[in-house]
Image (cartoon, rainbow, N blue to C red; front, side, top):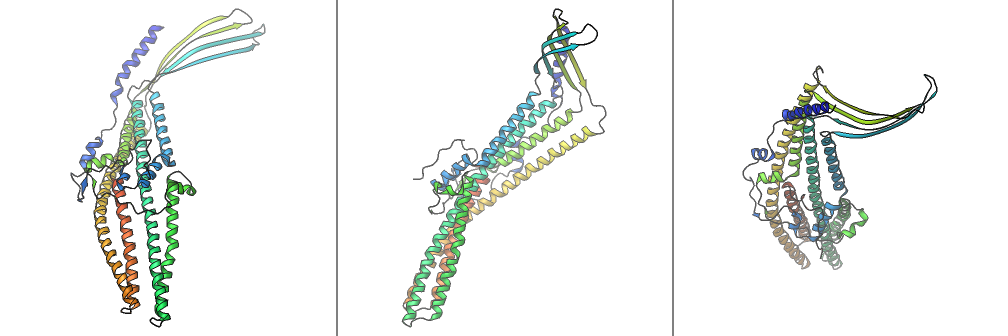
Length: 476
């Protein structure tokens, strides 16, 4: 009996040597794929420095923003859910890998049955214990390729988690910048409200002494009320950004004060230089590119799984145990039960099902390769666009700063001339409009410049590989 078992095991071992018969579909690795797409240098020139994109939010020099982004990366509920999805994929890989190994089970049974025929009447008692083993040797590599596909899915889930972290860091920074922009906008409206209130008071005083007209008073009042009507809308924007940031942090909107955001601060100023990163390095760093490549690896392994269905499948079953029985009170008889079986199944006719499955798997792989190339092209476009926005945004902020200084001087000069009777009130109104317009334009330009920096760091793929436990920055 033992010789039979040894022969069966030897046969299964010899068959297992053919496990390399089916391989994943051929495809280039990620670095080679990137090299075929990425240019040698960027098209848009930008000042470069040794700044890092790893924890890019520290480049803004805003400790509140630093603390906020790191809090989101550890507390966000979507991130925690994505971590669970990674664990699920890892467990699926463990389950798939288990199919490569034998399965061993213990069994036990007992029975007490009444025996009516043949006479005499009596009872039959049986009890047994045993061990069963079964193994489906991966002769042609189908199960091994299924494991590779599951491992690629784990890599894809991890890349998706990193992609979510990157997006959350960027979205949180953008929401913080929008909050500071709205708070600055409120301050601009408040300052201009005071300016226009003083102008209204001046026209009323001049009207009292006959130096002005009721038309000037009406115009000044109209200017003031038009500006005041803009304040509620901006206040709503502030509240919306506070609530959004609170949700990003896994908190309720009511807890936003604990995030030290309610107090107005200036829009954070980004670094004027960009990291020294080659296009190929940026593509390799981006988690969406890694996720797309993980899909290619998974599809390539699934092509092999589909091809393995063409070949026979073998199964080895072993059982051994003891069975004790007594009949009508007679002494117990004990038997040793042993069995061994090797079975094989091979497809003969399936109406083209296997061939169609292979074709579909190969088509899905080609689709994933096209998706990878499209992801890389889109990534290069985003980086080039954001480099351009960052460079041009800095120039716009500088020039609008000069325009605001000029309009401020014109406003003060026109007010003095009107007060002295050397100018009409229309000049004051025009100067007020120009000053408000330039102040809002500069505030908007600062916002867009900061958002361009956030978008650039996001497109470079920085910020997802931070430690799980981050140290909050000091807010002092």
